[in-house]
Image (cartoon, rainbow, N blue to C red; front, side, top):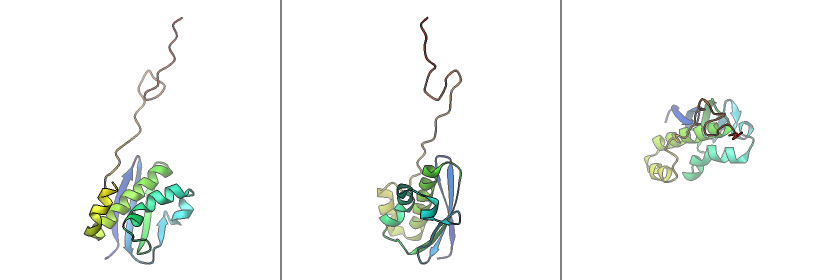
Length: 128
């Protein structure tokens, strides 16, 4: 299997993931996974497809991620990695699908409306 390119998205983040068989090196924006994501929760979110398919240490993964914050970026990496593993081995499709890893999470921030301080919040009402 040669190195392929996969895209994952979450909120306003986009991750381009390159995967090839190897020793298990996981680089995000030229830094290691635990160096890029300081919290264990974000590291676990990003590497969940590897844990689910029990393929830790089998692939060298290089990710370029941009936009959004760390939560969106870890979700984008998760989506791209799930797509890559699904393409590599068809037998993992049902496992990835049952954990909802192949579906793009389409929730976005709601836009601010005019005449209001935020998307839903209203200015304080004054009777007098």
